[in-house]
Amino acid sequence: MVRVTLHDVALAAGVSDSTVSRALRGLDKVDERTRERVRQEAERLHFSFSRNASSLASGKTMRVCLLFSDKLSTWFDSSVLQGAYEVLYPSRYDVVPCTVSTYQQLGAFFSRLPADRNVDAIIVASINLGERETDILKRLTIPTIGLDSRTIDGFDASVLLDDRKGMRDAVALLKGLGHRRLGYVGMPAPGDFQFSSQLRGDAFMEAALGMGMDPADLHRIDVGKTADYRSYEEAVNSGAARILALDPMPTAVCVESDEYAVALVRVLREYGVRVPEDLSVVGFDDAAVAAAADLTTVHQNPEEMAKDAAGKALELMRGREPGERHSMAEPILMLRGTTARAPRGRG
Image 1 (tube, helix red, strand yellow):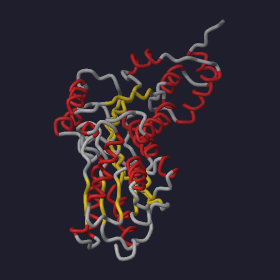
Image 2 (cartoon, rainbow, N blue to C red; image 1 turned 45 degrees about the vertical axis):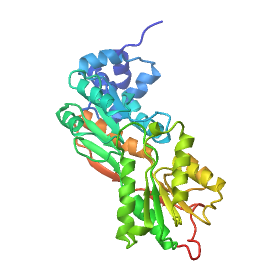
Image 3 (cartoon, helix red, strand yellow; image 1 turned 90 degrees about the horizontal axis):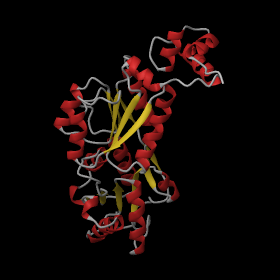
C-alpha cells in the first residue's frame, strides 16, 4: 500500500508543500478557501498529518485547556465543552478539560503554567480568580479567556453573562404579578470558590430595591456549601425548611439555578405549598430540566458562549485581534407554569 505524503496533497490541491503544512496546522497567512481545499483533498486522500511533528515545527501544542470547578457532567460544563469543541476541533486543536475544586488546587495549576506550558490557550469557566491567579494570568504569554467569569481582570478576552439583566427581568415579572414579599435562594456551592452565578443574589437585591420594594419584605437565603451536607437531597430540604420558616412566607422566590429550583418545588409541594398558587418560583439557566418541569426561568446558552470564547481564543492564538475582546451575552426570561399572580391579600 502506497503511503500518501504531504506532497501528494499539495499536488492535488494545486498549492505548495509549505501551504499544505500551514493550512493543516491552522496557521494564518492561508486564506480560508485555500485552507478548505487543502483540508478536503487531505481527507479524500486519507492523509494523516502528524500533530507531534506539527507542534515541533510550529512551537504550538495544538491544545487548548478548559478549566472548570465542577464535574464535567453538569449541564453547564458539558455545554461549554460541546461549544468549544465545535469551534476548536475543525482547526485541529484538541480540547483539554481540567477541573479544580479548591483554591489550593487552583494555585497549583496556575503556578505550573509559566514553566510547564503545554497548551496554547486557556479558557477559564465561571471561576472567580484571586489576586495571585490574576497576576499569573497577566504574565502568561499564551491567550487567556474568561467564560462566565465574575470579572474581566487578567483575561485577554472574555464572554460574560449579564446576570443583572436576568435578575431585573425576573424581579420585574414578579412585581408586575403583584408580588411584594420576595425571596432569593442560593444553591449549595461546590468547593470553596466564589462563582459568577453567586452574583445573582446581589443582582436580585439591587433590582428589587431599585424598583422600590421594602427591604423588610426581601429575604436572601444562603444554604452554604455542598460539603456542609451528607447529600444533595439534604441540601434541598435545608433550603425548603428555611423558606417555610419565614413568617410571613414570601409569595415568590428566585433561585440561583434550575436544578436547585426544581428540587425545591418538589419538596415544597410535599409540604403542602402549592406552586404557583401559594408560591411563584423562578429559576435560572434554562437547562433541560427546566422545560421538563414547566419552570419559569432565565435562559442562558453556555454552548453559544463557549463558541464565542473559543473563537476569540483562535484569533488570539493566530496573532489576530478578535472582533470584540470582551462581550456580554444577554439572558432571556422564559415564562412557564411556576409563576402566577400573587395570592389575594398576601402580595
